[in-house]
Length: 257
Ligand SMILES: NC(=O)c1ccc[n+]([C@@H]2O[C@H](COP(=O)([O-])OP(=O)(O)OC[C@H]3O[C@@H](n4cnc5c(N)ncnc54)[C@H](O)[C@@H]3O)[C@@H](O)[C@H]2O)c1
Image (cartoon, rainbow, N blue to C red):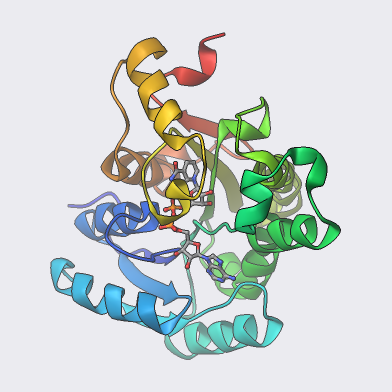
């Protein structure tokens, strides 16, 4: 018996085997969920194809660019053709222009700011709306996004992404309030540093990894498996009355001043 037996889960954000979304997909698969796995670009589709044999059940795969309304509509159509209900939606998507992650924060361009917000924060609302009918039809559904403590305190090098994560966490609260009466919960996981594709784009990632070992209550860096297990909890009925919150999976780093 798995914690997610009989549930359908869409997990967006797999670029390769190091992606947090892949850790979540594997944990969901282990717990019995049927998966829908979008990929952004052909290269990530190839990466995903190599990973699929590790899953117990073959997923539905579909192309998705969260900044493109036509792409969101195609996803909506592909999902609706196959499923009446989707019980879990995972949004593990973010991007900012490299120059905005390396220059002084003062130099953030209007375009770079809007880009980071669009891909990394607004996309949670857009994706949830695309899946709204299926989430509502599930009776009880769970939406989960990925954030980082750079939203609430300054992490050198996180810059415009920290501002996008602050908007993302506010989005979690407003969506949770808006959708709660329809049985849809919305939460975020705030993860400690992991060297993924996106993580490696953050200039201070090595310092952050080292800081966990030096200063965190649990002096160990987290893994995508840790996040997968936390996501199983938020996706399952064990968290049925939890919504609008941020769950820190960071070895306790966020409590240390
Ligand atoms: N790695 C870390 O240290 C860390 C820590 C905390 C939070 N996070 C967050 O976790 C999430 C996943 O990142 P990751 O570390 O697994 O890196 P990753 O690079 O493996 O995943 C990022 C994903 O975002 C997707 N993406 C970007 N733009 C997109 C678009 N326009 N349309 C569709 N998909 C798009 C990419 O395809 C990729 O799959 C992000 O929100 C990231 O900010 C990461």
